[in-house]
Image (cartoon, rainbow, N blue to C red; front, side, top):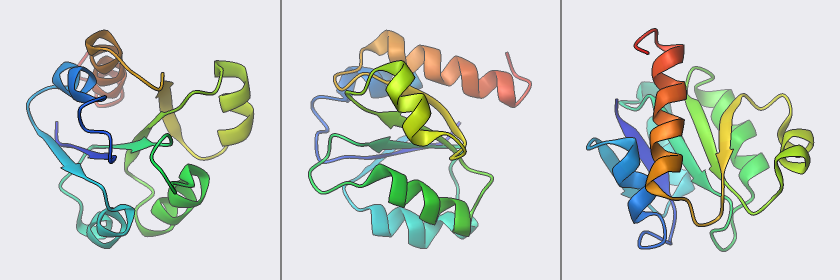
Amino acid sequence: MHVVIITDRREALGEFARGLGKDVEWTASAADVLDRAPASPWQLVVVDAMMSGMDYRKFLLDLLRVNAMLNTVVVTDMGEEDFHEHSEGLGVLCSVPACPSWDDGVRAMDRLCLLYGLG
């Protein structure tokens, strides 16, 4: 599975990325992902809501407009209930903590594989 992670905190998300697998691309540019999303090579877009200046809700709405088939995971410091209320209807596969672990990456990839019938 091909994954892109939008963050300026690559070091903080390193273990999480290893849990996702080996086909991980990094970028700090949400605009780059939106430009490439219509013909996307990715099955998963990870959005770091902790990144300075990132409005993850706006980004997800923009992403839905250009490619509604992409699955997303959001890195956030919100509690699960608050996050669910705040992101309902945006098609987010799951959220992970602000400093996610390898296990969080594995769990997110397991969910994605289940969606694709690979689990």
